[in-house]
Length: 130
Image (cartoon, helix red, strand yellow):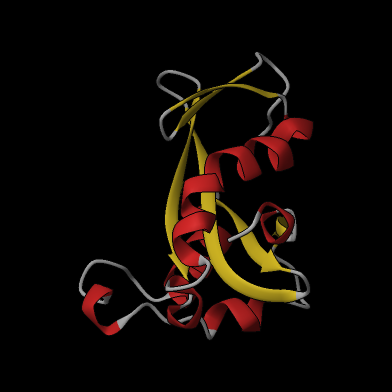
């Protein structure tokens, strides 16, 4: 993926206009035993109250999904449910996953997240609401 096409990848909130696109995402056949269907993660986000969903876009097309939560034990944020549709994995999936931390950090800056360690992001006290 070129630097120019990388800038065309963005994270956006899941809403009434894109949730069906997320539900249609498919993992590669060889990965299906390791991931759950995106509709399960959407339900988890909707009803569990702890996880927050984000759609991964390439231009105006949904190509993936991830969700985040805050661990109340140590006030850290975690990523989960990361999925890039099978049709984008060979060409863009690896780059999306490599860049997920930067994408997520930029997107979630308004939530008060301030420090990234691996898949864990520490939030500023009192800013990130759950």
